[in-house]
Amino acid sequence: MKNKIKILLADDEELFRKGLYFLLQRESDMEVIYEASNGQQVLDYLENTDTYPDIILMDLKMPDVNGVEATRMVHKAFPVIKTIALTSYHTRAFIANMLHVGASAYLVKNASPALMVETLRQVFEKGFYYTPEVLEVIQQDIVTQTPRLRFATDDLTNREREVLQLLCQQFNTQEIADKLFISPRTVEGHRNNLLLKTESRNIAGLVVYAIQNKIVTLEGL
Image (cartoon, rainbow, N blue to C red; front, side, top):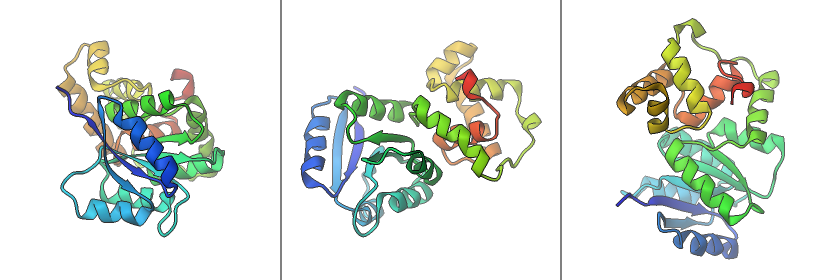
C-alpha cells in the first residue's frame, strides 16, 4: 500500500480550514496531520515534530507570521517540504513573490475541490505544479530580475538537457526513464546533477531557474 500524502493545513479562517480538512480526509491517499492558524504555528510544529508533512497548504494572509514569510522560512530550513500557496489574491505580483520564496504551486481559494486535490497529487509526485499562467509569470519575470546564471550552459550534457526539458514538462521520474530508455536511478542521478549545477534547492526551483535563464522555453512545454 502506498504511503499517504501527509498534509499540513495553515489558514486563520477556521471554518474554511475545517472544510479543507474534511474534504481532504475523504481522499484515500491523503492525511491531514496538523492544522495551524498562522505561520508561527507552522514553524513551531516543524521545529518540534518527528512527523513532517509532505506538503503545506499555506494561506498567505495570516496573523503573526504571514504565509509568504512562513513559506520562505520553510523553504530555507526544510527544502524537502513542498508548499502550495493558498490565497484569494490572484495577481501576477503575488504569484511571482510566492515563486521567489519557494512555493511549489499556486492555488486560489475559489478553485474547485477537484483542482485542489489534483494539485496536491501533482506536487507530491513531481515536486511542483505550474499552470500555463504561472509559467508565463516565470518567463516574464526575466525582464525584472538580474540574470542568476551561475554556470555556462555548455556545462550541461545533452542528456541533462533532455531530463531538464521533461522535468519542466511535469513528467515524473518513471515517465522520464521510459521516454529516454534509461533507468529511474539514472534519471535521479541526472536530476541531482542539475540541482547541484544550478544551485537549486528542489525541482520547483530548478524549473523556475531553467525558464528564467532560457535553458528551456515555454514553447517547448
